[in-house]
Image (cartoon, rainbow, N blue to C red):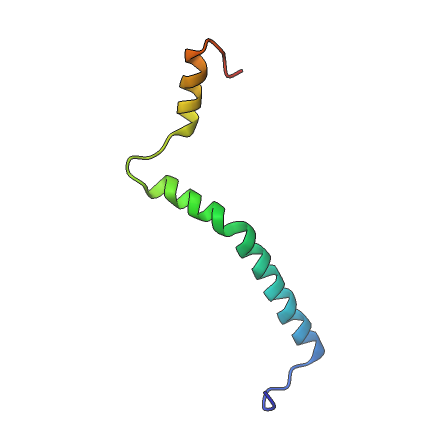
Length: 63
């Protein structure tokens, strides 16, 4: 890209933005997919209620 001259500061900023974006996608993609699956599915899953019922059937308490 000879027609586009970037300063060293601009190159460093672009590099930092790309690195941050990579990290955000790596750590945020799977939780986003799980969240969307829980909130958009029909019927909605309820793992917390299931765990509570399973423990209460065994005679244990959640607290």
